[in-house]
Amino acid sequence: MKKDDKKNDIIDESEVIDEEAQNECEECSQTGEKPEDARVAALEIKCNEYLDMAQRIKADFENYKKRNKNAVTEAYDDGTNETAILLLPVLDNLERAMAAMSGYENDSVIRGVELVFNQIKDVFTKLGIVEIPTDCPFNPNFHNAVMQEECSEGVEENTITLVLQKGYMRGDKVLRFAMVKVAV
Image 1 (cartoon, rainbow, N blue to C red):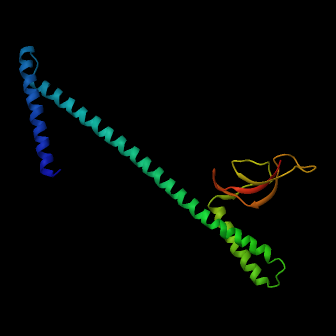
Image 2 (cartoon, rainbow, N blue to C red):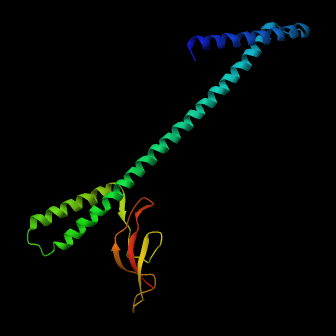
Image 3 (tube, helix red, strand yellow):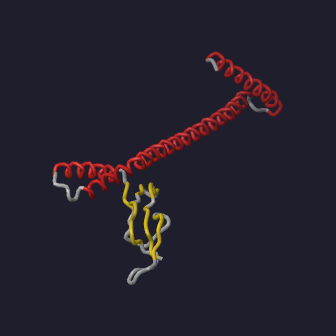
């Protein structure tokens, strides 16, 4: 809408108000009220309508800002989670490399791999990514039982006996379930 169109709409609306006031003035002359009072009353009604409309628009805009802020937060969390999921195999491989180098004689290589491993763990910690505990009874919300074994003496049912792959979570979202062997 152009600026001139807005002016025309305001003028048209003013003419409508004037016409309504004129009609009320004719009624006022019959009742004895002043014509100015009728015009003021008509203008107050229109003013209240505009105020209500402005308040609704303001509330709609506040709701829009809240929805937009929530969408941005969710997008950030989703991106962080997806990146962490892509880095989990790297962390697993570094852990395997450290285990395989236990008999290796070159300390500088071992220290280098340990530094990279610790850096990734620190980044995960800063992002709120934690390892899912496996020193507890089996919980299908956090663990994926891929193997079962008969309960041996001293081992209770639903006890995790072997961790095949570590699981990780961020906040209350599981990024990767812990792959475990469970006593039944």
